Image 1 (cartoon, rainbow, N blue to C red):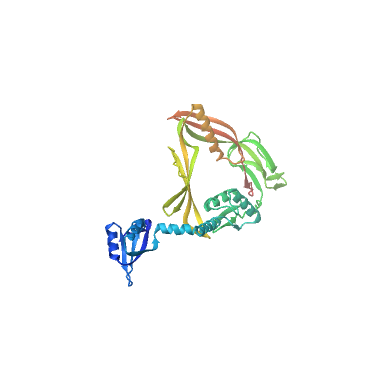
Image 2: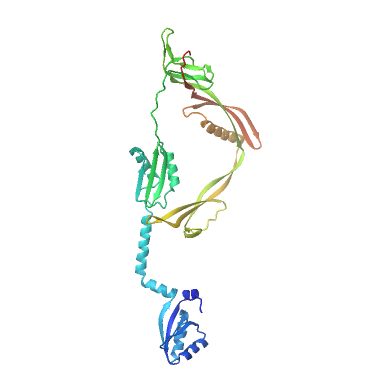
Length: 395
């Protein structure tokens, strides 16, 4: 018996033979090398058998020299299936187009629902979503993933503490938790202003209270700057001292910077490959060119595909291959010192208050050891050193 898969791909034909000399006809075919299988005879004496589709011409030649009548009943296998498909191509084409339209519409954003936000915050969220390309009518197949959207919204909008992002079918659902900022209560009771750290007074602006220090005066941490007690000895009055006392303070930073180093940069050349993923199987659909980069980095993003609101077990995968180059940087001692100073300033900016400013920098120690520049820098900063202290009875 012929292998069913082989005959399916090559095609097979069911043949009916009746008349005189059927046995001689079958023997003639066997001698001529024709292969037949599943031979059956019915009650009427008719014989049915299968023959390979490519052997039909040999069958016709053998039938001319016989007294039998030969009928081709039906064709089976891929060639006949393809022929019937071509015959019904209009219906098949319409079915494919219908499926593609439904698939496309199932991956388009048709709704954005935001809950838990006041109108002003909801407007801000919608504006941020526009920046991210998430609007009604956009394809969420190419949009950022929900966790990335969540992080960006939380970073960009100040008055929300958390936002849940969920894609259900063709609708994005956002659940917002806003910050409940209580009204800042005014401090109860009278207050002094004292120094938060040792400094030299550089400037002062006192709104209320009695100043007890002068410009260019050195003060220690905890020293009284502005008294909340005003009036005279006979009629003292305690108030909440207000003002800003700007003082010169000092920060020391130690930093190292190499003279020679290697670092990687992106050249700007990249290739993109698109594929469909079914489980662990990846089927390429675009971007077949090979990325002939000596060094590169790869970024892969998998996006879910939906059909009528259901997530399909198929993912649309986008792989970006970016070329990298290794650069050698050789700095002179002066260049390395300048780079080390810049690094030290950035470190200082993370330590000082946002309203403070750098006044002066002094290099205390400078050395070159083991291919590195080592610096010890003192930064002089002008910052507000005044902090409140409650007035205790007897002060």
